[in-house]
Image (cartoon, rainbow, N blue to C red; front, side, top):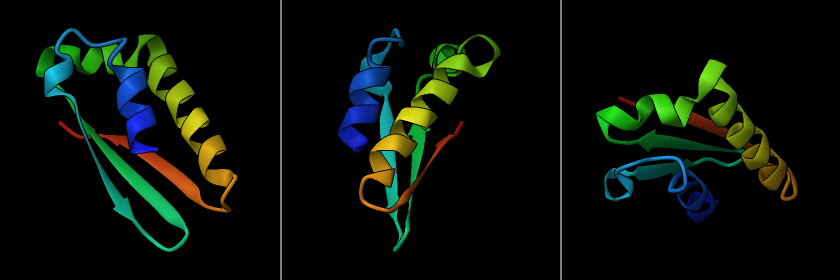
Amino acid sequence: MKDFVIGTLRWFVEHPDDLRVSALDGEKTLVMEVRCHADDVGKVIGKNGKVIQSLRTLASALASKSNRRAVLEIVE
């Protein structure tokens, strides 16, 4: 799941080498924290939050296959 998030976000950012995703794995929940270059935060969020919301939906759909919940957060 972490590789999916990184691979998807690489298409949106200008500094893909600064993109970091850390996963905190719980029993029923997977929390992923996205860290990126300061210039790319707006691109990761997208206009009116559409990019990050779409990515959250995709991550939740992937996690639901294994009866889990995925939470995606942007950390500055």
